[in-house]
Figure 1 (cartoon, helix red, strand yellow):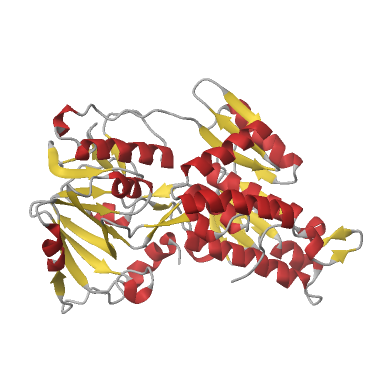
Figure 2: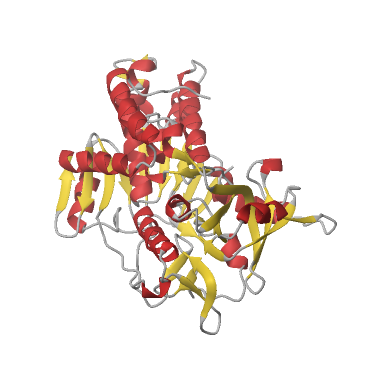
Length: 461
């Protein structure tokens, strides 16, 4: 179940039982010794960056996260279509010097420096399903739970769309793609039903939506035509499969330079991907997209990639200053310290990642690059002997990349833009070098080579 679906269901399921016992994590105190306890909420790019590099001799590092792994999000689209295996996009959180509670953070008491936590092991990743609650004390706290997928409260999205925020989402997408092809290959399936089953709709023309469309295009055109029955002179893929990107903006990839975005759109169209800008979704029904203006389009699978929404944990937090916009992110000073509601900072509490923004600072994209740089900055602050001497956080832009299919990509740098095959080489090299463990640094190029030689893995499991 995706994070967005859990938000939709939590309102129905959330029945806090008053008799449930509240435990305290006394075992942590025994192992703490004379170190300070650093609690990190979240295991995304920001949280994982902190726990990897913080000084374990100085801090007892405790992570509170509903999942026991870090997801390397740029590779999720590749795993969803079998270009890479799921294990290449994850890294374990539990490691030497790091204590993990696989649980949800419920509330934070800043005055008493304590967090109420609820285990999620009893029911997968769902909240409020009988998990035991306990408290965790902290000396320093890093708030980095990330954000959820933005649905704009459009009816039917959480029930009928797929998201691409986690490895579990990628696994469900791969299963749905292959299931649709198997159903379309049955002799009992009509041509009209095949058209619907093999129409893959993507709402959102940002980097996530475009890269997924590109990876899906490669799967459909490189590997599947020879594996499914032919219809006359054309394969099942050639006759029925379609990919369509819908976006509310006038063009896709709005975060890129206009020339690069236009190159990407021309390339996608040339490869057979339909791009439909200026489309506002009104509601989603099973197998049907409805747009404002009355247009309705059937689909076999809908992937929703329209940005980020406020994490409910952040939305519930009181006594802190938040962004006045609909995202309501936590406001910090330039040293990433959380600001009090009414003025001042909260001692020993920091926020970073998609859930936080520097007040009156430059507007930065909600990307892995920004979260990673903030994590490195904060680690330097925490590990230093004199934190007061650390300068304010300053973001250094190393460029933006997006894959557009057919071994082509675009790269926007500080002083130079690159497109085409050269950008694709940079794109692959960047993701490989940013992979965390040596295990994955070896696995990723190995799987690229294997799939180039023998084709992608189309196993359903």
